[in-house]
Image (cartoon, rainbow, N blue to C red; front, top):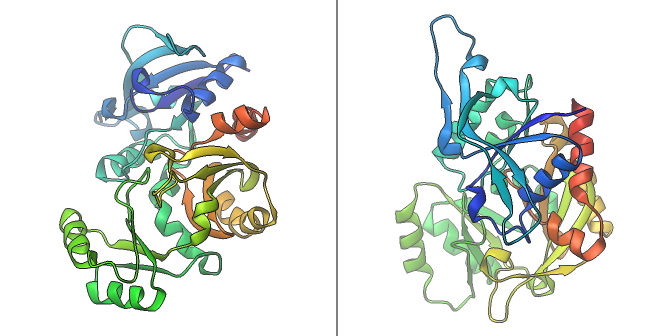
Length: 319
């Protein structure tokens, strides 16, 4: 069957197709004969008319688009048009965080069309599952963790655990993450700066030395692990995110990955979080990524396994 697929994403002109998971999902949709309509969340609108159903009032202005696996010219697009999203079969919510009020508002608007139009992932549950907070449902899988704005509590946590990681609760891509050692004198000034920038608490975790061996991204579809990618930090860097210089490396799924997936999979399925990515360091779960998980292009390059096809199999089964 041919599906009408809308993709809510950052501007397609600026993506790096070598590592862009959204691009891979679009290519696979096209292989199956599905039609792509791409729009920026800036152009997601709700225009209510008296007596009209809310689900009929959610529109997006975008373009019919074709993805091309060519770095020299990776897309073709039609003229701008406005579509009612209730008339699409699937919406892929794939714009990158930050998970701010702009992002949250988009989930509220898409709530009105889901599940009549299947939104991946379920916008209600994306909103209710911030990536650094959803993991707190599974304390047995986490390293020691503190979520707080209280500077006394944060200092006490460092006194207890010595090496710590400090990161913004709603950040992404490795931005704003700091590794502090027991004798680092910058803790007070760092907290002053970070707490002044945002009213949200910070996440503090015990530093895991195994990060030098890599921060593993495990892809889950319907709560089951289907592939993995290792991300190795650059020399002199504690962060392994590829946005900040981490290098992808091939790695297999192991017993820890299956153990973690078995624990969290039922919750992910219950919440309609069809496509997720988890971060695992030394057997510890550190994040559950539900907004725009990445890594499937790199996994395909290393293993030849097309996880975009696995994801689309799951989407089509839902329909």
